[in-house]
Length: 128
Image 1 (cartoon, rainbow, N blue to C red):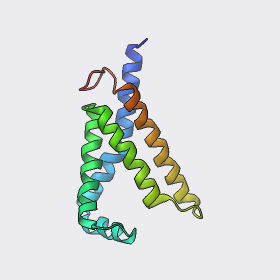
Image 2: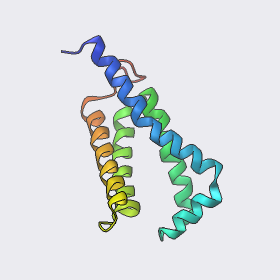
Image 3: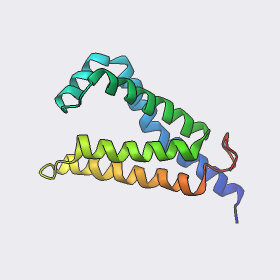
């Protein structure tokens, strides 16, 4: 049974989950050269395309999750993004700090899969 409290908790969850993506995307947008240099250091191919994709996924996906529009599809994309970035940028078993980031990304993917399974809640553009 859904309650009003659960609707507000779902909204709070979306706000908290979207914050890291909107924040990260914003800082990538204002520092394109530094971001692309970082991507190059990660040995990513097509650094410019990777940069554009990162902005689209992080800012676009973050805002869509925040408002709860097309939330299930967006959450699926963000879950895949979290796993991909965990593997590419953070899987360094020799580094405790990087493994914390790796596990954080996997945790976020799990949260997004909850949205895939249960929707964004009634306090969302999707209303479900």
